[in-house]
Image (cartoon, rainbow, N blue to C red; front, top):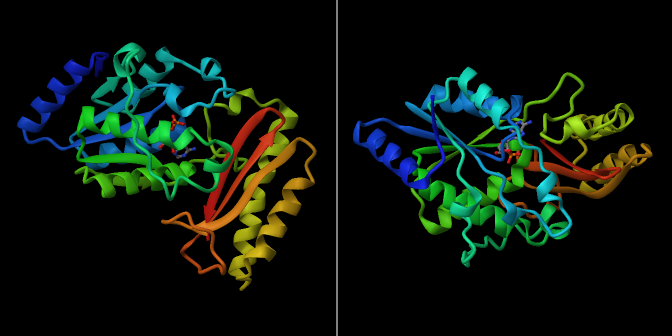
Length: 280
Ligand code: AMP
């Protein structure tokens, strides 16, 4: 495995892969790699000749009170996971090179970014989209892999590349969960036992909603009410939003059309923000 830090070296490695006729797959991450990332890396491994994992904690997507400094960083662990998943290139760009002091450009997707997490995190999607595009431009992959865990982000990237004509295929992988249903996440290790116990209710409520819909309920309000009620029974959870939206446009649905509806939830588990979703 090659470890690259400099943007120029990355561009050269990619140019030479392309020259050799190899297809390139990119898995963009913020590191502290876990089973959720590994799932995407395996999809890339199955599909592409050269697998690149980028690790960059992007300050642009953190709000002023969102603790960019405290986001977990684990370079050794990231290296080890990449090695064991047969990654070809681990790309660890430096903050100062990707975002020099005079950096002054941003891209903003304005429609899909507006709802859900865009309401409580007003700068988030602009910062996310800007770095997502920059990473795609540096690496120039044929296929880039994103997790359904962050369905709104994946949809925003999909829209961004469509609107701006970036030639890359976007692939969205399934959410990887622990045995208790909690989606694997870099911040899960911060949960105490009792916080985790409560956090599990989020996925349980989504599964419950799924079975309500499977039993023929298509009324959005009814399903929203059931999910909110189930989450509110747990004293460490505070609902930020529960929403039912079209899976591609992220627009609120009036009626649940099976196969198109995404039920998305964000809660506070005490001080830790948790998001999850399910397609019904
Ligand atoms: P992050 O490092 O949190 O920015 O995530 C990098 C990529 O991994 C994103 O496309 C996420 O959606 C994806 N991801 C994170 N957690 C999971 C998970 N539990 N299952 C599937 N994909 C995930």
